Image (cartoon, rainbow, N blue to C red; front, side, top):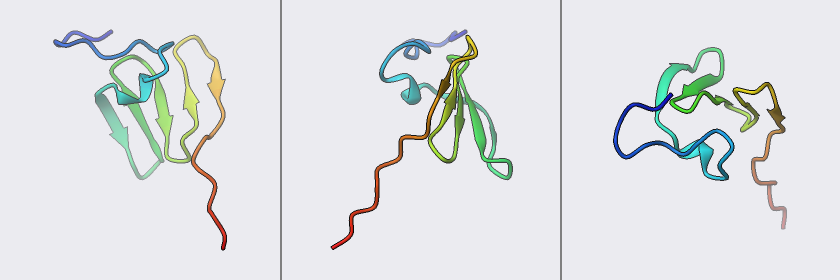
Length: 63
């Protein structure tokens, strides 16, 4: 899907979230990345093959 240089990481790559944003709907809480990944504001992801990646934002540290 990526047509620019250097190419974005593939959707199955560990660094897939660093791909460029091609569409964004912040009012709906999602962005579409150049590699076909939907990235949600809760840090969950929907991969192009239909797999779901659960939200993985860091836990809050309590003192």
